[in-house]
Image 1 (cartoon, one colour):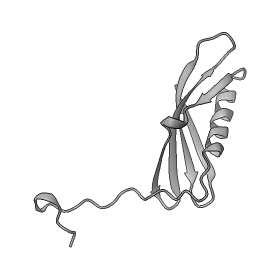
Image 2 (image 1 turned 120 degrees about the vertical axis):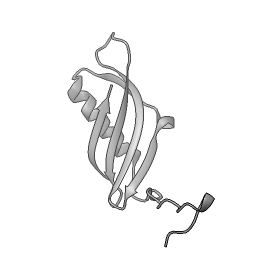
Image 3 (image 1 turned 30 degrees about the vertical axis):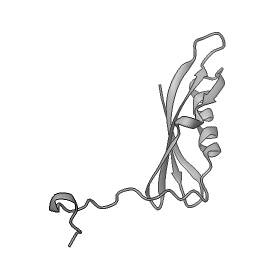
Length: 103
């Protein structure tokens, strides 16, 4: 029987795990983000990732997600483009499983 919480309601099950940081490196995600941007914009320059805007969520023992944002110059002389990114990482070994860039 679930433990009773406030007002006698059942407490929700813990859905997120404490992140296992032993094998995680933001650098692996950032390199993957840079590669995605270079495919999208072959002449991209000045890729800047905001380390203060990163967040890490580990939803299972085999899946963690690093979210962040940055900006880059798609072509020299153009204005900066702001983008968000998400890397799915295997926390057991730090491998980047997938990378998505939006913006």
